[in-house]
Length: 64
Image (cartoon, rainbow, N blue to C red; front, side):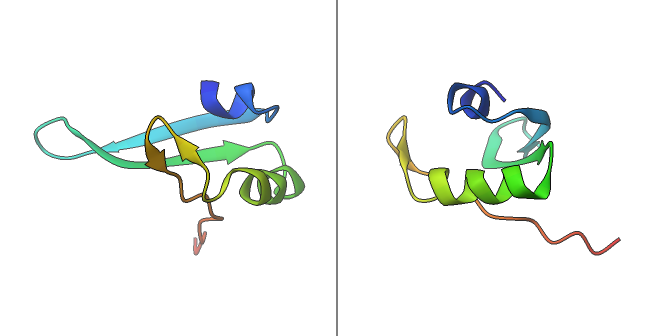
């Protein structure tokens, strides 16, 4: 969430995924305030380098 805030986005909540041993899988889900803000985050943050890793930022499918 700090990363999104540092980039001027208001994330509502974030969930990191971990394996059975408690290690990060390198994947997270971040809930944004609106679809428009989520679209802006994808446009600004997708494919940038952060702490030596290329980020993939996309809209998750919500098939509930």
